[in-house]
Image (cartoon, rainbow, N blue to C red; front, side, top):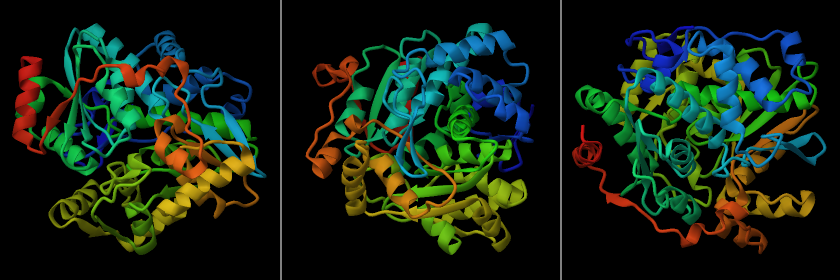
Length: 462
């Protein structure tokens, strides 16, 4: 299995190389040169299997000979052993033909754990063989950072630097990042928004001298392995509702497009997905793009669903690559337009291709709060605001096909928003009960690239 860049000007890599590289050297994102398909019989055989068994079947075709079957099964088992629910990603019914996929039973209470816990195992195994050391730098709107820290903390061959927007994450999210005591973990509060952090990350990857000097690796959803791990729960949940013998649909609250792109890959692999519904909050660039054909960045408006407060959705580039017939030059051109002007227009053919797979919806702050309140009253389910964005949009797309809405985080990660909507302040699980008593370690940074690179060089000794 070879991996190619969405911009067509970077060398082909193996799975292991693409995983450790993250962003391609031409600025693009890696994708498999072809997506393997699973047969009707292979998907049907998943019924009754454990999450780990399904994960092996779904991911194995993508990893080539990077790990033996026995090694890969062991790494998968280790990745999910610490989850707080035996089903890993259990389904709950909200209403007739509407189901909630709970993705918050991992160690940091967010869906990012499904990918990050596995990536931690894969990196450790790979680096253990080579003896190399890497510097992981991640940008987060809230959940990726804590998941990455939890996955890589204490490892001897990895330094982890997490950039998050100062004052724009919840207090629980912040403390999950800043209270790690391990010496290899560095939490950096950056003045600006998530797009500021993500821009710094991409600039570091595009500075090849710096990139090579510190052995830079990325664990944001620009990393293909992140997307691949998230494909699994589309299969596990769909099979629970009768796939492949009947179709299912998914609504995904998303900001950076990685989670819903995983659903797109599942669909390409043969999972009978009827609709993939993009749910956005007031930062609705993806909804506007699908509606108008124009991808136009705007000011990021802080919301009660901060992990979705994004204007530049990195993984959308992967969808554009397929929509433009896998023409890397065409993708590079629109990405250059975006960087220079803050906007681009999707070609008519590419827009039609996107609309054949994706639909979308947008909800306001008031509608998000109302969705939290209504879902609790009608289904006895307490939602985080991101999950509530999903359920609010899903209601407008319900039909004869079962709809699965992804619940991306535990409500206790956003207690203020949940309490304002319901009067109930959700409690953290017992293992996190002392979170607010732990000492914080954090460095405040401006959005200056040179200052950030100097800090990383100093702390890694590179």
